[in-house]
Amino acid sequence: MSKPLLPRLIDEYAERFTTSESPELAALNRKTHLQRGDSVMISGHIQGALLQMLSKMIRPKYVLEIGTFTGYSAICLAAGLQEGGHLHTIEIDEELYDMAQEFIVKTGLEHTITQHTGAALDIIPTLGVPFDLIFIDADKSNYCNYYDIVFPLMPIGGYILADNVLYDGEVVLPPEERSKNARAIHTFNEKVKADDRIEHMLLPVRDGIMVVRKLRD
Ligand SMILES: C[S@@+](CC[C@H](N)C(=O)[O-])C[C@H]1O[C@@H](n2cnc3c(N)ncnc32)[C@H](O)[C@@H]1O
Image 1 (cartoon, rainbow, N blue to C red):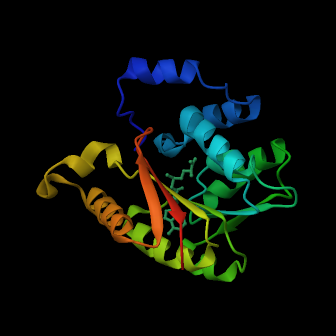
Image 2: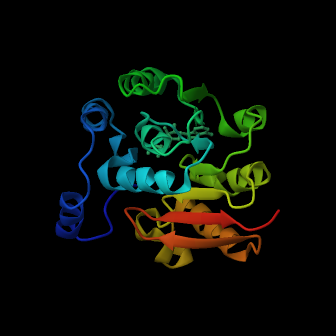
């Protein structure tokens, strides 16, 4: 899913001219690649830098992340939190908790980031705070459900970022050649496009990030 859509040399050039990863994020990236067969899911340097930058521009009080994996993007998104702000991140695979927590502690964010283990659709209704920045990065078949469940929890002016909306370029294939996940992502993109309560742009960075800003309830 993180196979670069840009030519490799352009990708490497972009990395070279992007602020370096912190030592902690670099160590987390390395450990994820060494220990996880599914390491392709990690946001990594370029997308992580973008998430940090967007979060610092938005200055959210509360952030929700759906899909923690090893914690890389949660740590990036926490970088822009207001004083006293908090990030909730949800992961269904309980085996990932310890690695994410190790690096949340190493970055001094243990009082700022709360990890939740379980299915996001069950946990989101229990959180009870308005989220001004939401990062959707979990099972593609539920993207539309995540959108519907988080939308009422956002104030006007709040943002949703949804990852993998180009799905390795599959979204531009003829419909019959798309995988199930690519079809789900395309349905999500259509849903966003049809929603007149928002403004949105598809940012073709890495695997594609849909940026949504809420205009009205
Ligand atoms: C692409 S990875 C997340 C990557 C992470 N955000 C990062 O950038 O490093 C997607 C994660 O979503 C988790 N996931 C899948 N279905 C889920 C669900 N229903 N609820 C919560 N997490 C889920 C997976 O176990 C996986 O770890």
